[in-house]
Length: 112
Image (cartoon, rainbow, N blue to C red; front, side, top):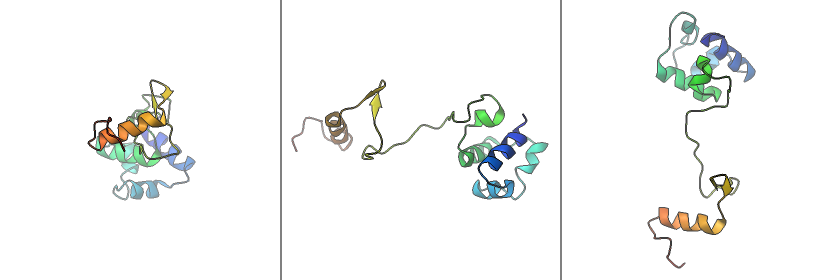
C-alpha cells in the first residue's frame, strides 16, 4: 500500500477527512494530496503520524504494526492510574517515593 493510501485509510478509520488531517497536523490545505506524487518532508510525515497515533515506519510500510511508535512514552510518576515497572516487574510504592525524592534533589535517604 502506498503512503497516500495508508494515510487516507487511517484517517477514514479515525473519521477524519484528509482536509481535517491537514489542519490538525498544521499542514497546508492540500499537503497530503500532494503525497500522491511527491515525497513529504520527515517533519510533515511526523506531524501526520502523531495525529494518527502511528509511527512513521507504519506510514511508510516498513512495519505492519500500527501501534509501533518511535516516540518514547511519557508518564507522570504521580499518576495513580499508571503502573510503573522495571524489567517487567511493578515498582513498589515505597521505591517510587524514593525515586520521587531523588528526582526532587534529595538523596533517597531523607526522612519525611
